[in-house]
Image (cartoon, rainbow, N blue to C red; front, side, top):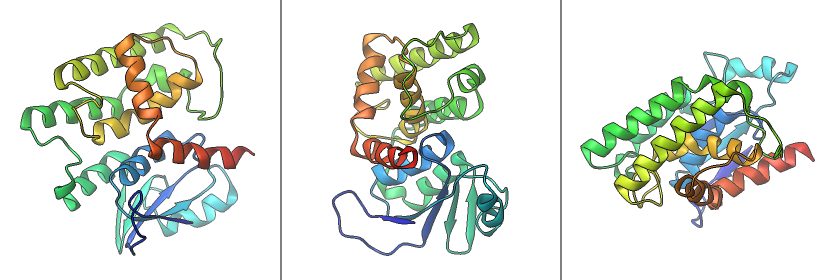
Length: 221
């Protein structure tokens, strides 16, 4: 278990406990983790190894769905990455986890929901392997369609809102939901256009992204 204060700030106590799976492979866990970390929201990390007897024995304590991620806030259990993000956006409204502009916020919710429910070709064929390197991977056609769609979304947002993040100067829930895609594109050596490549660099250079990567590396060493 680890405590995560605001980046660079003093540790403060928090009732928030985020239960996650293996950092090298759990894309769903990565979303709320990088969201909390990037916004400097203190939380306790509880990491469970997926597909093990230990996981099966303890998960009921934290998650009604028996899945991760799940956020425990005192006696409250919030499961599913999108529900966790929405809960945090309400609880920490002053931090602006969604864009402040109504139109931008609606667009951000739309592309986040599309990530949450779609892109099955990408998920099936380019599974998250944070520290894997497969530069010669041949991308199947259904995954190519997803990659093209993601690039279109990214480039529309970056052009409309000026970058460096999808909705301007501030990191948002939308960026958190596409952070695992960034890792997939790096792992599989996906060739991208200039704007998308720049966005991959922006996200992968974040201290929060690198911190997750350090944890993932410890799992495989």
